[in-house]
Image 1 (cartoon, rainbow, N blue to C red):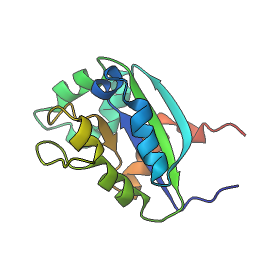
Image 2: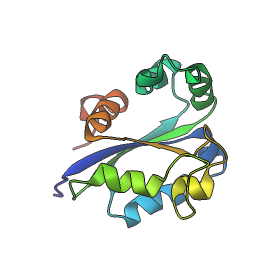
Image 3: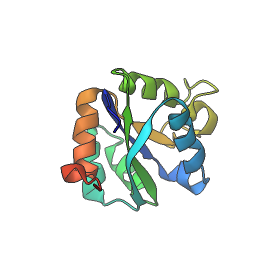
Length: 143
């Protein structure tokens, strides 16, 4: 049985799903030592996405963000890594939001603009645990 020092929550956004990039994105995480602990997809509910992005509720882009994420399919991933800095490793792989994203990162290679940036990934260990619990309640793993 594998032991994980860190966990990361990832959401592949509708723009990347429409371009059929999920496999490429998941492969990039696996190549960096991440393992898939749980995965699910579909069109998310507004309530779920509002809870995931609750910290942005008062910002002007919040409503547009919720509409965009809920417009089509997404892929949710619960990833584990054997190093403690898994969130940092994931954020490096994801890259910054456009226009600051660099080639070779997921956003640098696949994002089209600030909102349609292909992917969401936890920005801290605390947010990873909160996001995982929202999307994969009670662990939701098969034994």
